[in-house]
Every structure is written in structure tokens, then in C-alpha cells.
Amino acid sequence: PPVIVERAEGHYVVDVHNRRYLDAISSLWVTTLGHRVPELDAALAEQLEKVAHTTMLGNGSRAVIELAEALAPRVPLDGAHFMFASDGAAAVEQALKIAFQYWSNTGEPARARYLGFGGAYHGDTVGSLSLGAGGFGAELFDPLRFPVLRAPGFDDADCLETAAKLVHDHAGELAAVVVEPLVQGAAGMHTAPPQDFGRLQDACDATGVLLICDEVATGFGRTGTLFASEQCGLRPDLMCLGKGISGGYLPMSVTAANHRVYDAFLGEDLGKRTFYHGHSYGGNALAAAVALRHLQLIDEKDVLVNVGERSQQLAGALVDRIEPLVAVKETRLRGLMCGVELHGAPGERRGRRVSAAATQRGVLLRSLGDVVVIMPPLTVTADEIELIVETLRAAIEEVIVA
Ligand code: PMP
Image 1: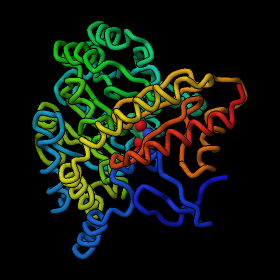
Image 2: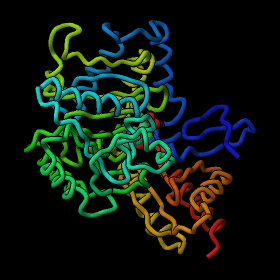
Image 3: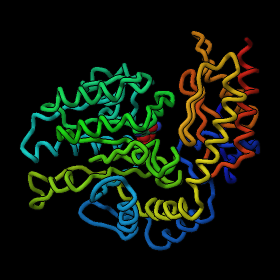
């Protein structure tokens, strides 16, 4: 049965029957510092006394400008500019359209296709679904999904080398390559070695093909650095952020563009170069105020240090107590982004049942097929990591009888 949440306390959610669950999936990967963080609550209340929302279409707002100014030096883009939206998928759609129009604006409209990766997931809207590799019921929408060139997924050791070759071979027709740096999340937490991404960057640099990094899942400290692109040595032309941007408080996402891309849209007011795109709630002031305070708190609370320490602890516990279980095929971990892959058994829905058993025991987990995802808040404590591992171990032993 679904957990119906009534309230939350720190890293725990409390349901309508007053049962407490450790939120080990960070409410679908969005919660970074836990729930009801006093500083974020205060930032929200303070902004509420000024204004909740005004349109960014042709106008601006102090809260959003202050957030953009704080983000610009932190994102791995040269001369970052921002376009805000509400969901990760919308940030991806914006990036796809911006990349497409970039080549129209710069006089090379034949560069109009995209390169994606096997296993990729970028959201549920039609454009982001097209870039995604499928699964999760996407096939039904195949007639609507536009074709993309596709490199192998991160479960193939040569994927980035192949992608770089595809960029070279198809440069004349490619607008952009879209990649989830370091970890393909929804694919089941598949990881690629950070040093391999240099090949892709080099191919984009050599050919001019735009590099779009989708850090909706990996951004804001999840993999141990503020952005996973930093570990991979990537400097994208466009970057998509969402989920953790507001600490998990309010729907907010953003597409960041570097100066190369931004400059291609400068021109007369409402002219041919204008990017005609916008969402009603893009640049919500309440979300922006929370996001700004959240960015400061990541530093003030040394959150990245905790991610590193808890990740190490989790890595050790996985090796000692989860990997030896016969039901477990593999574990994958980067920062606090973790997948425990179970040996599949057709029709048994093992991932789902193990997650349900863990939830019954008070640790909220959710699976992607046979992969049980562990995505605790970035401020998770050592005791809570211990609780997650022990609960998962017990749940696997309960559900899967060897
Ligand atoms: N990109 C990636 C890498 C994601 O993991 C997700 C969501 N899991 C999205 C995009 C879509 O974000 P949203 O659900 O906010 O639309």
C-alpha cells in the first residue's frame, strides 16, 4: 500500500497512521538537507512577505536575479545565463530547443539531430522521452518520439569512446549530444569512469557539436561534488538542473547556457533570433528564495564533506553485508547515489517487493526494475546509513528465499 504522508521531521516522513519512515529515496531524489529545514522554512516565509510569484516573460524579479547571480560562478559553464522552469523534463526540453535554434541562428540549420545514450532517461515529456532510451512505458509513444542517434549506455565500457566517434562521424547533422554525467540514474544507477568523459568533451570541442549535460539527478552535491560534470572534467554548453535545486521544497528547474550559446540569441526585440519559449511559473520567487538559501547552506553545513564520508561508509557496508547475499548481482555507488541490483527472476518483481518489505520496516525505498535505489538526504547520519543497510539486508533475506 502507498505511504500517505502527513508531515515530516528531518530525514523522516510520518504517515497518516503516525508511522515514521526514513526517507531513503529523498522523495524521488529531490530532498537534500532533509525536510522542514529551519533555514529553508525561514527563507520561504521571508519571501512570502515580499511576493510569491511574478512573470519572468519580458520582466524580472529580485529573488530570481539573486539566485542566478549566486549560481553563475558555481556551475561549470563559461559565462552562464539561466532560463528557469518547474520540472527537470522542462529544463531538458528547453535545452533541446535552444540547441536546435542555436544552429538556425548561426546559419547551419542542417545541424538538427541529437545524440543520446542507451539507458538514458531525461523526463516524460515528448522531447525528453525521445532523447531517453525507452522503458517505463515509453514504447507506446514511439510514433510521437523523434529519432535520435544513440551511443551505448554506461553498462558498455566503450560507450564514451563510441559516442565520441559518433560525434565526429555525424558532426554535420548533429545539434547536440545529451549526457547524464557520471551516473545514469533512472537506467539503474549505471556509472562510467569520470576520466572517460574527456573523449566526449574533445569530440564536441573539435566539431562544435553542443554538449548538453543533464544534471537533474546528479546536481547539487548528490555525487560528492556540487556538479558531477566537475568530476568528469566537462564544461557543457548547456546544462539542465532540477530536483535538488530547491532542496526538495518547491518545483524548480533551470537550463543554463554558456556565453557561446547565449550570444547567438542576441538581436532585435522579438526578432528572428528570439527564443520564443516560456512557462507561466518559470522563475518562481518563492522557489528562488529557497534555492538561494539552499545553495548557501550546502557550504555552511559542509554538505559535500558529509556526502564523501557517508558514501565511504556505505561503500564498505555494501561490500561487507549486501554484496555477499546470493540474491545480489551488483552494487553501484557514486556519492550518495546508489543502486543495488538483484538477480532478476521473471515475473517476481523482486525490486518492488524488497522495497515494500524495507518500507514495512520503516525505511522508505523504491526500485527501478531489479535495482533497489538508495538515495538518502545528503545530510544523512552514520546511524541512518547503518539503519538503511541493515533494513535492506533484512528485506532481501525476507523476500528472496535462496
Ligand atoms: N533528467 C534526469 C537525469 C532525471 O533523472 C529526471 C527525473 N528522474 C529528469 C530529467 C526529469 O525530471 P522531472 O521528473 O523533474 O521532470
